[in-house]
Length: 379
Image 1 (cartoon, helix red, strand yellow):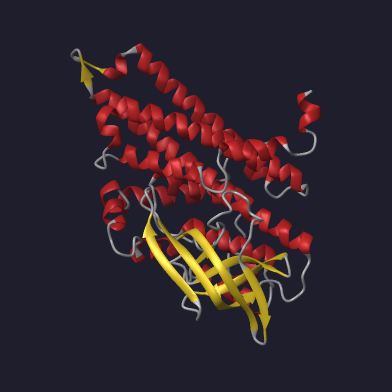
Image 2 (tube, one colour):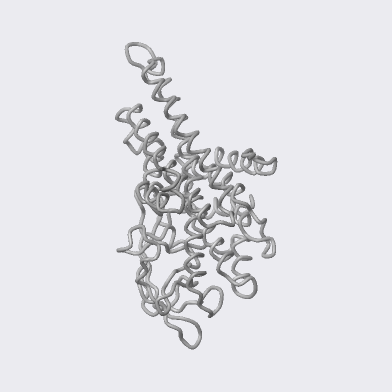
């Protein structure tokens, strides 16, 4: 299997990297984080001009039919630069509309508006008491004359307050369904806050909020649950791809720092014990990269179990690499590694949040071992 980027994918990655290197340095990023909004309209518009918002959108709605490998190329660069704009949230929302929405009517129109950068999306994965259980849904929906009304609470919705529309899972007569809620809808309350990694998240409270159901009024329990799980797998894969970029940046920053910091009159990069540790950081990074590329190839597999196996394996290996590389980077930076003045500390924070989003290492190990065939293979 060829895991090399195509010429077009490499050109897109290079163009995005050049833009970020020139306009999205660490100080610029920190200035954005400190603003009230926590995101930059200028950079969002630049991403639109680069075609990033249209990339995951189907061609029928004005997009580029971006593949998982296309998205992998983009997310690595966004992770490397610690980008705080709501791209991940919007891309996952596009996948939800693509999988669960109607190709005609309002869903198609919404995708067209995403492609042009006019609107942003967010998917409400988490509930206060659910931990990592996607199907522990206390939010309920009741049919009304002109749609549905939602009641419930969603927590830690990444870029929830910056989104124009939310994709919200809820139960209808005990069965899983997905709904679109417009920001500002009556009965929907938003509490925005900054997370420890400089991103924005929100708590959404629905008290009879007006909602539109994705895919029409028909209810199919198996399809609804399966689609919701696949959307979460897509979001998890994108997080793994973002983590690769952050791991690369953290490894490079650590190597450069050891070339400048001196002890006993020589750079600490000359100490063999530290060279071994940095070599191990690189090994962890490359192993995480290989398994994430495999997840990109398997995401579209016709076998749901094959997809689940690849995604969970990637989340486990990336989580382990993120923790190891982050800890080594902080130790090799010394006291500077935990200060806000250096990018290393912020990269470590972002990696820590990624590792615990949509299932940590233990959760995905449990999911992986529960899949059919594992017990026989391990015997």
